[in-house]
Structure formats: structure tokens, C-alpha cells
Length: 626
Picture (cartoon, rainbow, N blue to C red):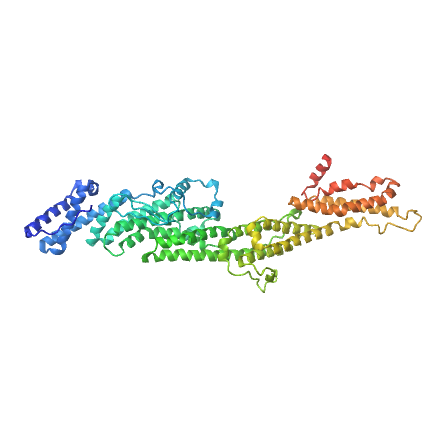
């Protein structure tokens, strides 16, 4: 129980002077400037001394306003000495009990919130010294989600003053007995006119404790310029760490500091003193915390930053109600405003990056054809990118509000008929637009192949890859829609048809009857010389097609087999029929082996070599092994 203030005696001035003298004696006993013992010992380690000293302070303070002359002067001097002593005691209690948040003191249950995108990206090699601390903190800051009502115990001298809501985890930063002592000291310092000194001491010590907790959580003191000078790989790791740490800072560190301020200063009497002390403690650290997110929000935009910016956006929007709850005071308006502005800038950055990504896809300038007509790196990158975009659909649906638009003056951009997908939302339309401009770019790149057949094979491979990526993502498929997916499927099948025409029409042309028959003396009506030339042409063309197209690539095994079967369905019957009609004419002449060099079965085996990406050496080795 706090020492009770005593009233003036009624037996005259002698009693009053006697009370003053006794109080002054107690004050002087603990004057650190005059006594070695006073410098070495602290009052608030002995409850009895605490009681005597606070009684003496209360007694002296009454004389400051009610006395005159020498007594008033002595009282004022004693109050100054007492306030200096109480300031030292106040600081000592704070320092003695101020340390980084101890994970063992946090409530031991799981945190109620998490970020699915963040969890999915956790890197196994990130286990540095700080991660263990913050993981422990996250595990211990939770409470049962079955009750969202707050429970509070006021400082009665024993027990606890911690409390918990559904997301905020206010914990006991300083033991309740020490909180009571701090409250007693603060009340006397404020009543004596030492409000500023009290706030400064409190804010200085507690801010150091917050700074220590920040270091334990891995939050560095980086200016906006420092953050923007970091390379992206380093920033990605820091963003992951910031998201985890920010939740603890707002929901545990800042919330607990606010609760401590309330209980230390609630009985002081000065208006809004707990607000001033809270802001003195956390304003600098809060600005430091949010400056990192602000630096990311205004940094140079590039496609690889989108998903980390969305992670930051999701984390901040999840934290915003807690920020508004913890910083609900008039004096902390600037913190709430900063958080809201950062959230707005992150949203704008995400929209800007998506737009810049679209332009980058359209104008990707590489002109060197990929070997074998395989899948272009741009195709893989873009489809992996929009697959990730689809995973952030809940966030981006709220952020992307307008349809994509083609610059009317840009003749190098494709047209898009939105009537075909009129029931789609803005985000889905942007994804369809990205796929459209990717195809447009790929069509341009296909023209760099000198072989028309390879050009069509390249388009087939890439559009097929686009289709498979859409089918492989339920979210992406739902947004793109089956109607547009069928259109893409028709596109790669058309490219496959064009490839077969360009690659095999000359080979198949050799197997026609036209030009082989004559009215000469040859009884069969077949010109043997023309037939021999036809077989020679077929052999040369087929050998060249096999040699070249065995080096080409169709990476998808199912598509590769379907294409080979489609080729054989046309080539094998035509060759078998041609042999059936004209084999006897060649075999009845000289050196038939020079003209009929391959059987139907051998031809089918040769076709199975196609699209494997084999070099000439590998083809030779395969033939020898067979």
C-alpha cells in the first residue's frame, strides 16, 4: 500500500516545524551529493525506507506552497534534492527491469496470424542467430482464439497486469511491484513540477529497451536511402524478416509499452501524461520500423519486386487494425497516417509494376532464335510469373481496378477484343492481355528462323507450354477461362499443322505417281529412270529431314509422341503404298539397294528419333547401337 499523505498537526507551528525538520532530515540523508552511503545504496530496495522517504517528500512538498521566508526556502531546496533523488531512483528501477523482450515471458501458444505466401517462401538456409529468437517470439505471443475479450489486472501490488485480445498480446514488461514504485515516484515528480524530467527519463530508458528488442528481432537502423541502395537479393531476405518482426513489434512490443505507460502514469493526475511517455518511448522505433516499408514502396519498380511488395502489402493490411488500436491516441496520428500512406503506395507500386511488366513482355528485344525451336526463356518466365500472380489473386483483385489498354498510337502492339471475355474482371483481363502480348512477341521471334517448319514448331512448343501452365494452375485456369484456353489450344494445334505441311510436303510429294509413267517401250508404262530419280529424291529429302529434325526439340513428351504419330499416319501409309506399287520395277533392275535404302519399319524407327535434340554425333552413336 502506498504511504498515506499526512495532514498538518493542530498544535501550532512548533509541531509543524518539528514535522518539517524530521522530513528534511530524511531527505538530506539520501542526498547523493553529500553522502557516500546515499550514493552507494538505493532507497527502493527496502520497503520500509520507501515508506519513510515518500512520507518525507509529501511532508516537504506541503511546505513549499504554505510557508514563507526561511522555511519556504529550505522546503524548496529540500524538494529539489528529493526530486533529484527520485529521478535517480526512477531511472534505476526502469534500468533494472528494462531488457529486450524475453521470449520465456511471452504467452506460450501459437500466433493467430500468418502469411501463406511468406510461409511458402521460407528458405531453409535462413537460420541465423536472430531467426531463432523471432521464431520463439512468434510461437509464444499467441493466446487461445476462443476468447477475444480482454482481461486486465490493475496494479495492486501483486499479481500481473498483462492482457490479451484476439491479435494483440500485451505482456508484463516490468514486475508489478516495480510498476507500483514507478507510479508512486511519477506522481510526486509531476506534482512537484518535474513532469518533463519524468517523461525524459522514462522515454530514454524504455526506448533503449525497445531498441534492444528490435535488434533481437533483426530490425536494423536503415535510412530510406540505405534500403534503396541494397541489392534485391539482400532486400528479399530483409522483407521476409521485417514481416515477421513487424507483427511482434506492433502486437507485442508497442502494445505492451502502451500498457506499461498506462499503469505507471494512470494515477498521476496530469492530463495525457501516459500518451506523452508512450510516444517518447516508441515514436522513434515506430518510424524506424515503418521507414523500411516506405523505402520499398517508393523504390525503383521492377518485375521481380512485385511479389515481395504484395507480401508487404498483405502484412501491413493485416496489421492496420492493430496499428490503429495501439496508436489510437491523438499524439500518434502521424504513425497511423504513415502506415496508411505506405499501404497506399505499396498498392500503387504493385499496379505500376504490373503495367511495366506488360510493357517489358511486349518489347523484350532478343532476336537470337533458341536452338531447336524449344521453349523460349521469355515464355517460361512470363508464365511462371503470371502463375504466381494468380496465387496473389485475393490481394490483386482489390488492387487492379481498371482494364488493360493498348496505346492507340503503338502499332507494335496487338489488338484485343474484350467482347470475347466481357465477363472477366480487370485482373483476369490483365493476365489474358499478358498472354496475348507474349504470343505477339513470340510470333515476331519465330520469324528469325530461316526454316519455316522450325518457325512453326517454335510457335507450337511455346503456345503449348502456355496452355499447360494454365491447366496446371486451378486459380489461373479459372481466371483465364475455358473459352480462351480452347482458343490457345487451337493456336498450337494450328502451328503443328503448319509445321507438318512445311516440313513434310516435299517428302510426301516424292511419293506421288505423277511424272513416273510414260508411253515408251517400257511395257509397264513406268519410266525406270524417273522412278530411280524419285527414290533418290525421297531418300535424300528424308535423310536431310531426319538429320535436321532430330536436332530439333519438343520438350513435352506427350506432345512429342503425338506429333510423331501424326507424321507417321501420313508418311508411313504413303511410303508403304509407293513401295508396293514400284518396288518390283527397281528390284528387277541393277543395284536396287542404291534406290530402296529404307524399309517401312526402318522409316518408322527413324521418325521416332525426331525432336530429341540429338547432335549429329549422338545420332551416329544411336544408329551404331541399333
